[in-house]
Image 1 (cartoon, helix red, strand yellow):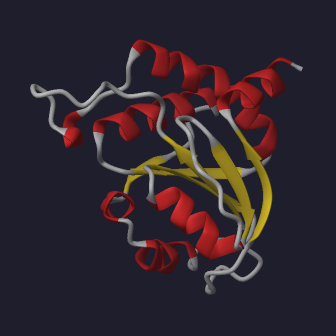
Image 2 (cartoon, rainbow, N blue to C red):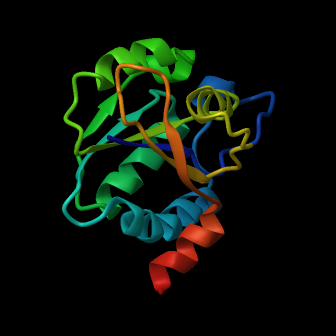
Length: 161
């Protein structure tokens, strides 16, 4: 099974009138995600059975919708466990999946970096719209192999090649 961890695109700045939970993508964040999706598609492959799991926070949901559209309307499910940082609960859900599935988790820092380190041992800071592909040979365990990591600029360039 392939697990792709994807951080949401650039979001509104935290100001006195905006609560962190309610922050949305900026126009630059939307562009960043749209540009990155074509490269992300190269990593997933045309025949992959893709599912997108997203945090319920607006910036993650908006990112996930853009990814779903860019990948041919892949199914999208909100998972509150992502916003809570509950990797064990997510693992209990993905262990029931088929080994050919690709799950894209759209989430937040610091959880994505923590999860990547826990699953692979690789310490990677996820900037906005950055993604990492992790191969989970035994989905019931919390062990995997980092296959790739890319910032949005690299993903955008991959999509153009």
